[in-house]
Length: 173
Ligand SMILES: Cc1cc2nc3c(=O)[nH]c(=O)nc-3n(C[C@H](O)[C@H](O)[C@H](O)COP(=O)(O)O)c2cc1C
Image (tube, rainbow, N blue to C red):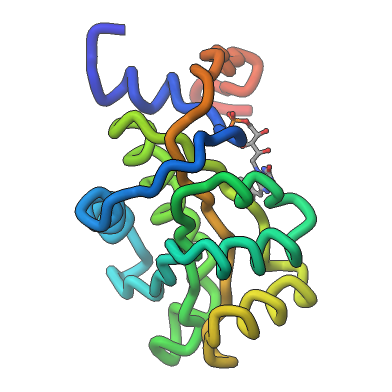
């Protein structure tokens, strides 16, 4: 593909195997800048991010989250959190979409920087939401949507073309 941005989007894969190397703070800031560039309903930006680099905290999250075991070798994790009560009209309905857009930007930014990342689910499992709140001291009105472990990839992921023409309806169903 001749366009760098489209190439980044189409070659992104979930990465679940990391070297264990730390991720510099400046790199995490670049990724967070990309996260906050995401669109959101009425530009409400009902998101907040918990950045975890401490090994013990990463291990605590790893112990509690059944599908996030790759945290054991991640250099960092970003926990994308929603603020459903940021306003009285939009955020309660739109925070999941808004935070999902920010999450995809994080995954793409990691890939663009040569790092690996994967979305691991927290919300809608309220037990996981409670566990993440407890471990990270997140207030009760803030909802952790996911945990995104980030690391230096251990091996190069296989690019998979997921394009499916059958998903497209031109003009009408
Ligand atoms: C809402 C959501 C929840 C996910 N939860 C997990 C998870 O808990 N653990 C995991 O390893 N991957 C998780 N994934 C990653 C998907 O398994 C992955 O995106 C999918 O298999 C497609 O692979 P790709 O990302 O390499 O294209 C999740 C992805 C999304 C969007």
